[in-house]
Amino acid sequence: MGPTISKALRAMASLTMAAALIVASTSVDAQTPSQQGRDKGVYTPTIWVDPDGCEHWVMDDGAEGYMTPHVTRQGIPVCRRGDVCGVMEADQFFATDKYSISPQGRARLANFFQSTGAVSYIITGHTDSRASDAYNMRLSYNRANAVARIANQVGAKIADVRGYGERMPAVPNNSAANMAKNRRVEIICIR
Image (cartoon, rainbow, N blue to C red; front, side):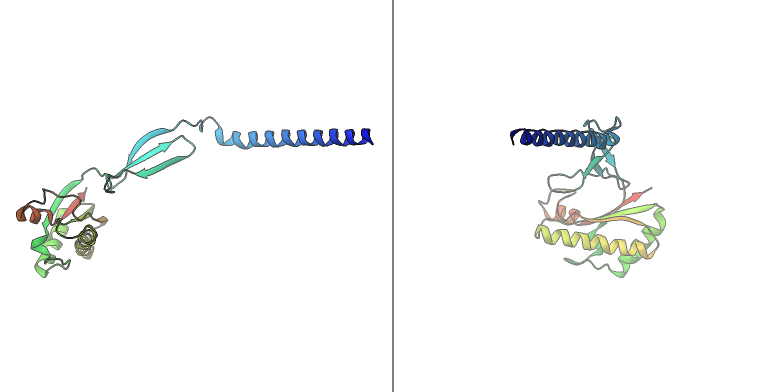
């Protein structure tokens, strides 16, 4: 009985080693096509700027890559400033806490979009700091959307609509005059 068990153990050991060699050679073959000199674990960091001028952090090794938007600590995308071709003082176009535009304001905006000749526009809404952050974010976005709707009605192409609330003040919110300057909608022309 002893020699039979030894033969069986040797046969099992041989099969196990053969299986291990097959698995090892298969896994090496599976890795080889994906490597091909590109994927060496060396990532090259770069910054990619999208058509809107916003930055994205990119890590790429040639075979696969990773990308994430570059944002500030407040969560605002880091964008290179385009050509701000129009700044609407919100007090002239919107009633307090409202985002509907008066008929005179609509006519002025329609004329603006028809005469600037930009390829497309980015509309950004801003508020002062009097209300809550969530309220101001919603109000600024709704005001920017109201302007974008008028642009669409006259055939202007809108690349993006953004609401920044009180997060990007033009001046400090420390006086009534400064707060009025911060209540605005900016129109960025992409040429």
